[in-house]
Image 1 (tube, helix red, strand yellow):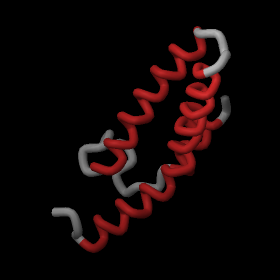
Image 2 (spheres, one colour; image 1 turned 120 degrees about the horizontal axis):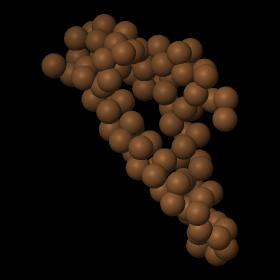
Image 3 (tube, rainbow, N blue to C red; image 1 turned 45 degrees about the vertical axis):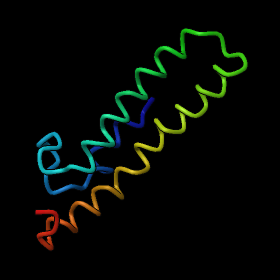
Image 4 (cartoon, one colour; image 1 turned 90 degrees about the vertical axis):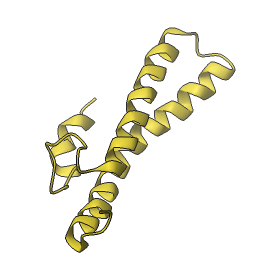
Length: 87
């Protein structure tokens, strides 16, 4: 619940407010995060039995994995910007 409050410290990209225009890796991960959020919303409505419980567990891991991967993605993209790679 409080994890989004730490986003300013997790995202250390040189382009933090450009919404993915210069960040292709972040853009892909962002849309996976959005799809995962929708899946979690749907699975939260269903009873947690059998397959739905496992799907909820996996989508929860993906949700928290987004926040864990954010500093790594920022470092990779910062390195590409510094070296001029990816153009």
